[in-house]
Length: 52
Image (cartoon, rainbow, N blue to C red):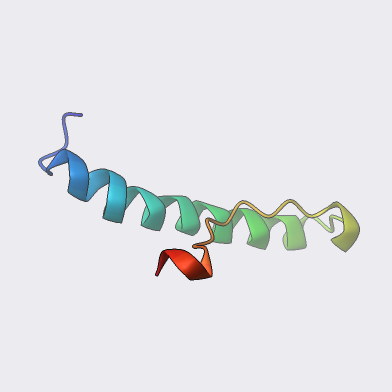
């Protein structure tokens, strides 16, 4: 928590963005390493439709 952001901004805005960016990179490397599509792991954070 040494980041210069408010706690709510970090957890509600920045953390999901960072997690999705990591998930995108992980997807890319699964493709680069020829992981079978059936074995792909999806790490993205999804928002429920009723939460919007």
